[in-house]
Length: 370
Ligand SMILES: CC(C)(COP(=O)(O)OP(=O)(O)OC[C@H]1O[C@@H](n2cnc3c(N)ncnc32)[C@H](O)[C@@H]1OP(=O)(O)O)[C@@H](O)C(=O)NCCC(=O)NCCS
Image 1 (cartoon, helix red, strand yellow):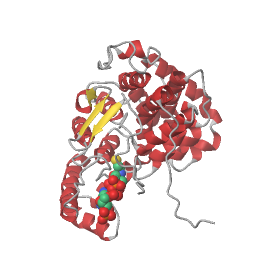
Image 2 (tube, rainbow, N blue to C red; image 1 turned 30 degrees about the vertical axis):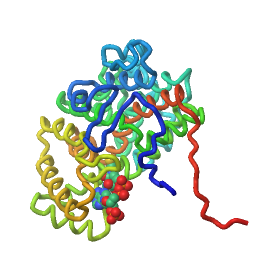
Image 3 (tube, protein in one colour; image 1 turned 90 degrees about the vertical axis):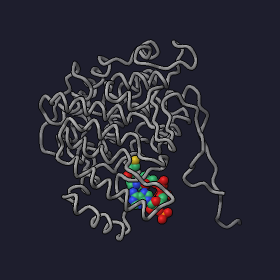
Image 4 (cartoon, protein in one colour; image 1 turned 135 degrees about the horizontal axis):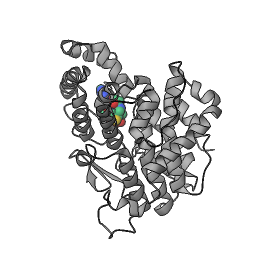
């Protein structure tokens, strides 16, 4: 029988992350996302996932890959190396041409990343793409707003520099902390559609940059990473908590889905929604209270409609509130997801190259036979 969504098909052994959809648990390289996100910089999380993808030769088999041991496993992955990669990507910006004119940030990122050349191996390629993504996305965003691109500052943290290059001035410390928490929270999520895409491409022994470019295409769709912009549109359209129920019922009556609700794997509320809701609290966003009310109303309506399947808030719901509160424009939300997840894809490509086989499923022919 055809399994068109491949639910439950296990295609890889991985040390990078684990999703328990029944219990609502996300483990990234041996740590719960709730523990990791509030205290970890994005650079440290990159070190963790790339170390996990590389395998743990420097620690006992089965031991956790902590921030303390990650540098021994992936010594090339340092904040300075990521800063240097941002600086190298900046040199390419004048040559990106029409790539930065795409109306959609994900199209711009996909085209811009295609300008990178493969280097001397997976880890070097990984650092190059992880460093390039924020530079290209910020340059696209500035171009869109009719402003000159802002060069990276390699000594800045990755999150701070991304925000700086986008808004054109030094960002507030609490915005940087919230953005770091976001980037860490979404860095990896087991066999998501984009990660699977990256692993399929890597499984042919193609290079890491090709795999990442393909994954950007998979992430772009609204069923995967394209939802947070529409979530903010929804909050704006609703405007006040009292109007949520009528608006949501109207959407469903028109045959549309409620963005930011439901998940392929989670049968409880996405644990990342709670992490991001907490991370956005210090920013005193005017949208947070409205978002909570809309989430409650949506959860109730969907529970009444689909009593057999829990449709609760997913990561995109509070992503929208958080990225808006740190000052990123909504058109940039999907590409900001990619700025983080690119590290997870890179780790999976490294792991696939190290341990995997050609991924080549089957199809069921329903056409006529000669
Ligand atoms: C994430 C998502 C694609 C998962 O989809 P899935 O596992 O393929 O689930 P299905 O499409 O099989 O949906 C099962 C049922 O729930 C309904 N459903 C799922 N999510 C829904 C939503 N957000 N709003 C309304 N109904 C929804 C579907 O219409 C379907 O109903 P049906 O059986 O009557 O056709 C889906 O929940 C969705 O489209 N959510 C909105 C987009 C979003 O937030 N994406 C970001 C994901 S992190």
